[in-house]
Image 1 (tube, helix red, strand yellow):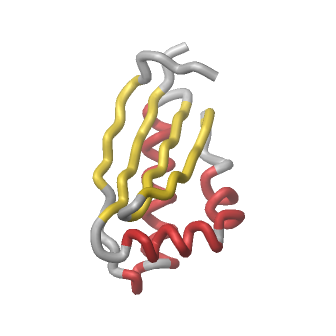
Image 2 (spheres, one colour):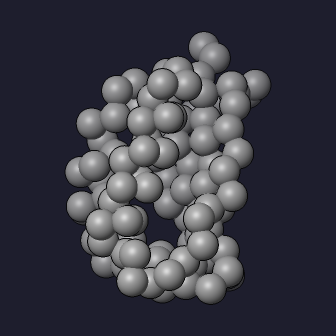
Length: 98
């Protein structure tokens, strides 16, 4: 099955603080991501300079929706942190092992 994935890489000023907040409020984050239509998996990964999120959905419309809800949540809950927008990479998966 070919699915669509999006990776959002948050780094630079404010990224660590953003991921501190995301970790504190992970149940809330889950509550906005879980309803995304066609969601297959979602992961939040802490890195040395911030973090990465990986969303896999059945199609591009699902990953587009995940980008939208993540952006809205950050605007509403973390705009005072002043983190830079993430670098976004997305596309159809070539191999997926579970």
